[in-house]
Length: 533
Picture: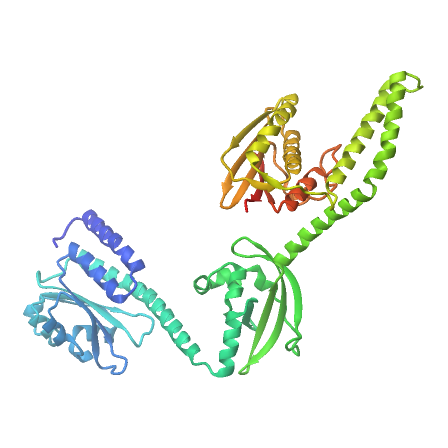
């Protein structure tokens, strides 16, 4: 390499270090890393020799050549297992300082005699202090051409050596982790009977379990069920422990039992937290002190109540529907009969004009009776003994039958109805009830949309389900309202009964269908998924 200008040297250093960076970061073994380094620098400098030594663990006065490039097998054999004091690398390891030898062929330096035999004319060696200062490395770069190093060349080689210390440390940590994992796996195979049984039960338990130190709550062990509850993998726990484990709100809520507490006693507490998958979990924690070989530990056993709470929520909603059905079946007809009689007489008075009230008052009374009658009709549709007459129907055909009625409702309010019906499999349904379900959803959508409002009905297949979608461009449903809309009598409308969506839920439940929704500022879409088999 010839000396260049300062700008050229800077550009060269940038190119070399940029090309080296990926290998520094992603090489998995020292051999792979050093091969990458040699291939890179040999393209830019007249370097054709690389020697990498470390001190043997059993014989600290001897060196072991662990990686080399640019030497023959016979030369490598001569370099193997040299005494530390016989080589330049040994001098570097002992002094922990770089060593540069130029004009090697003209010197009588005892340490460079083997290099002279190999035809090396210049040689630079750098110490690498990695992990353990008692096990240092030495890395040498040599060339059989040119007697001296260019300053830029030496500077780049020194920078590379510094970066290699960090790269070797990274590889060492991963290798140590793999070794520890291998040792741990091997150790676990030969656990004594009681420890082996406990470890097997702990690991295989479907209930999340965690063992921590009592004082600072460092995690000793967590079973797979615990990691699943937190929404992380074991690798993520190992590599991102502080963020994923110590930083999780679950850990901050673990109660500490009394000093005298033992299994099955302990402290229990119901908590709610959000895991790393964004799921809200409801759990019961029970903590117990353990004395393990004189070390106080904390065993936390967790019962995941999330699904149970969801079932409770659904049962509560179904119970409300059942109650409404009971009320409807018990009093619906009895209330309707006298109302029909009163309405008849009001109509007769209105027609004959024999009354002291304004006709408008009579008309309001009749309309209010009609509205009460409609509410009773909705009550009756929720009755538990309402017969469902199932027959195989195509959902697209049902929509086409009632489409003129839906379009007429929309035209009155100046809104638009569109459809996008794709081929779907036939399903077992009560056509009258499904018609009512569609009309309820559409009328809700018509009331929710403003000027230039539109409603679209869509059908499609999703795996083994026939899906009905009723979508609108209304303002969306507020988050605090979404959980309430299925409850009977809940309504945000001034004259609403709060039974429309409750009826839809009841009809879907009787047909074994599910309902969910997506809502936002751009509108709301309800998805009804029917089983096809």
